[in-house]
Image 1 (cartoon, one colour):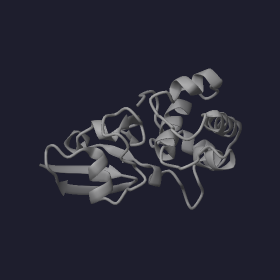
Image 2 (cartoon, rainbow, N blue to C red):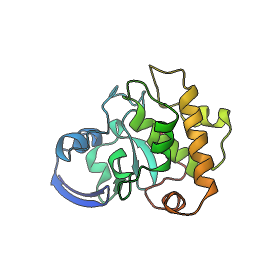
Image 3 (tube, one colour):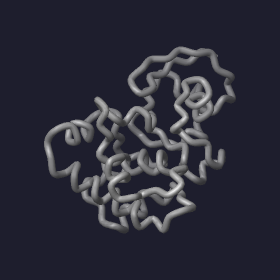
Image 4 (cartoon, rainbow, N blue to C red):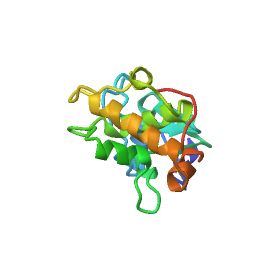
Length: 174
């Protein structure tokens, strides 16, 4: 089957097998290796991407289902060499250890913040509960999401612009 998708702002048209998972299309065909293959069962959330403004676990979506869609991966978040505020907050708050879950966590955190600009600790934990981290106790991840929320609420400039772009999702939930 032939699909056309826009991934991180670039249009792609490809022939794909009907059973090809989106995560494998992104990684193997497009080289978007930041989208991690974790469990292949949609339990861990490591493969979370944004599909038409909603976070999805790309191991549970067929590439053909994404035909005509806009996809944002972890590689598509930075703008002009500047990390997205959530990426920067994860860095500043040491919200990773091995880093395997980090791309999916960041993508889901952006979705959460698009839906709730000022989440408390419980809301962050609830919003991320479909994304698993096997290394941390989640404390620094929660701290990073709340820190990013504060920065994104507080200002003008590139952070505020990114909050209102189509690459940031509203609602959804992986």
